[in-house]
Image (spheres, rainbow, N blue to C red):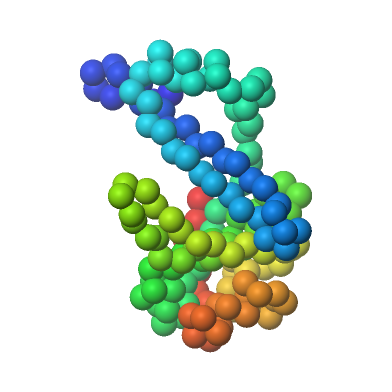
Length: 151
């Protein structure tokens, strides 16, 4: 839990609720809370079920169109590499309404080997099958990809 110069603890907790409503599309809702101290953190922790603090090992890599097509549309293309799989996600421009943010996203699962290859050869992602990869070309007019960084 990071502390500021005055010693106050600041934590950000992300709660995710996922559901498969149609067997075709998943919906994920994220709620982010910034807690200003250990008491608030501990109180929230008590109200959540045991085991809620799962550590997930992952790498995140970001791409843009070769000519900045995604950036121009305020869209984000992320490749997340997990232990057993990889996920590609395109997030559309965020819509801010009365303090809440809505950001539509498309997600596709791909083999870790394809994800690892994409870091060195981003255009290999355009050869993948599926709606997400097709929308890169049809919705955003992406004809080439470039790697922009990761962590």
